View 1 (tube, rainbow, N blue to C red):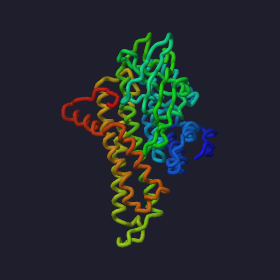
View 2 (view 1 turned 180 degrees about the vertical axis):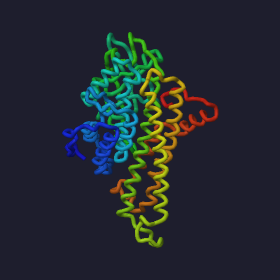
View 3 (view 1 turned 30 degrees about the vertical axis):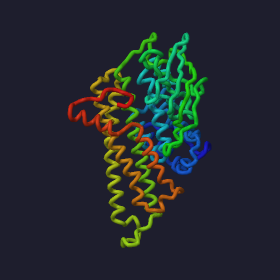
View 4 (view 1 turned 90 degrees about the vertical axis):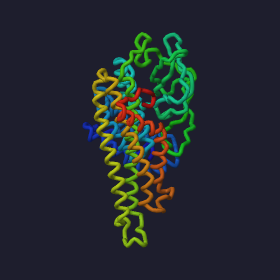
Length: 405
């Protein structure tokens, strides 16, 4: 696709219902799917793809209606991520992370802050990136008059060069007090490095970033009033919220692999010469494999949708979120994450069994689905997600909020 890929979204009425927005996401996916394999091989910065997300209105899905947003909730956002990821896992990841970082002000900030951020983001169709990798050394934050100054380096910054604004996170020098702030991505001292070179999710712009004295007003410090942070349990919902993005990313990629493989089997695969069938689609083992893989996918999709509905209850009343409710949601997300990981890895690997040797040609690009899932499912060890579920089952123990739980 190119920056001038023809669409008429800007002249058509915007979708109104959740179903309409999911259908819009399917239209976007159809555009992305047309040359997904070629774009994956090229690995170019996805400026045109992000423009597609903006023109289609998907970037403002969670934004307030009065400022040009769609006013949809997280249940719809997860389905939209899943739909886009069917065609292009990288762009699905970019969109899912965008939704989380767009929501970060509401998760952490006071009402005045998040209302301002969400209004501006919807009005200007901002695309969000984030430099918040918790495995790296903390970014150091210092005060300089009415400004905060961020200094340090992060090895991952998804969205980097295609973002309009970037979420920063650091620790005040000499303390353990964390601070989030949103800054323009072209801020002085914010340098994105073109060093993302992994086997999958190649278009996510997830390279490293250097913060060399990046300045932002004290007033942008999310959740701070008179230089003191006002904590809420809702602040800690960022982890299960983004982990459920991961779940739907994996399910979308797996669904895309199944759809792509099925089309190949119908049109290109040859029946085995000793199987007694003229068409590949009549081979009993082929039919069985597609049935088995699809049943597994549908089961985890149903779980993911149910967990999203449970989480939406918490998002609907942030001030009422208790530690127990938060912990219970995290356990449910962990279960969905564990199953989605297993199912997605199985599907993206086993589709080759029913497409045949010729489907491994690089021109088909069928391997990109496995490479994308394999790359991102290593974000954090799935064994620890299973442990969260197991500890809850055996001891009623709920996970303590961390950067990964």
